[in-house]
Amino acid sequence: MDSVLQIAKRAREASYNLATRPAEMKNLALKRIAEVLVERADHVISQNAIDLEHAKNKGLSKAMLERLALSHEKIQGIAKGVYEVCDLHDPVGEIMESAVRPNGLKIEKVRTPIGVIGIIYESRPNVTIDCAALCLKSGNACILRGGSEAFNTNMALAEVIAIALKGSGMDEACVQIIPTADRSALNELLKLDQYVDCIIPRGGEGLIRFVVENSTIPVVKHYKGVCTVYVDKFANPVTADILTVDSKTQRPSVCNAAENLIVHADIAEKFLPQIAKLLAERGVELRASERAGAILKRSGIEFVKAAEEDFSTEYIDLIIAIDIVGSVDDAIAFINKYGSHHSDLIVTEAREPAEKFLNGVDSATVYWNASTRFTDGFEFGFGAEIGISTDKLHARGPMGLKELCSYKYKIRGDGQTKGKPIM
Image (cartoon, rainbow, N blue to C red; front, side):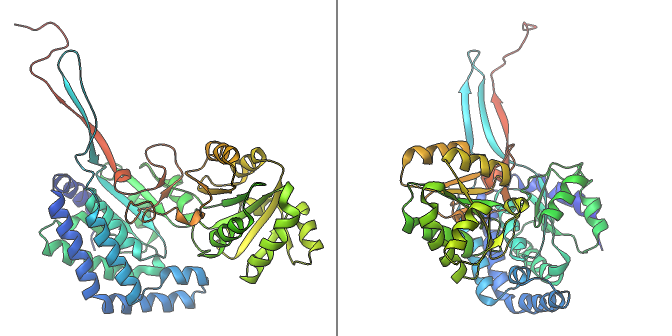
């Protein structure tokens, strides 16, 4: 088995060559990945079945099992995502800015690959293909380290990628997977800043905090997704019902699902009972503040009394915390205090509170009358995303191809000097 150091060294060398590859060659490799994935679907699913059996024996939650499971339909969807990345514009070499200085120097700010990206993730084996595709298209070599619960699946997917790269004339070292679930390998990777330029962790808060605390390499991350729906006093109640239910229940196991619902006091008495009923009918447990709970109690709706920490908890489940606020300013303050700077929504028909909310909420994505579930690379037109960032430096929100690029300055002159010419 290759050491993590050897993997990183090969990735660094491969990154230099990959950075100069034309879009046509990268697209050829991507199409081959999609083809081989479909061709080898039965083998991948058989390995996935082994992982699912182990996961069930370990007592993994239903949400985690859902993330882990693959089917022919899911594999077709992953392959489709790779083809969609092929169709995206290649950002490498794109001129971001240009200027001609008074002395005649021509300066261009040009997008370039970051170099080598380490991606650490849990459960979702689709990440193996998604991240490989995005890194290849953006000219980055990548080192993948999946979770132990998906080890057999990820190794089968790594075989798919290696076969495709070799068959399309690309260096197999462009995409490598660490072939062990041993935590010591992860610790070693996080210290290889000589060869790895960036780490992107995808998973639970515990994993992400471990990576941040132990890495000597810059980390792009979000810790958790505590997303809030705020129903303003000027909200259309039908729209508010639809968006709250979708944000919470469409897929509760993901980071852009709503965990909090806050309602303007002027409409709470009328609105809360109707939305609470809709949520309860869909199996959602309601955790209400004292003020919200009093309204629910009068309406005969069951709820659990919320503790303060409930409003800063990522449930990843059919649970929602409910409170009442007196103004849009109070809503903004609530979200900035309890939220995770991920995805937050205001439902209102009035522009003034909407614009105040959009400007005042300190989150990577802020919505007006649209579900929080749209925080996703595909939905934003980026293709498969490599993750969501709540950082404020380099990348924020869904990270697509452009967010996997850095830049350099290209300067063209005709003999200009800073000092006096020697001739």
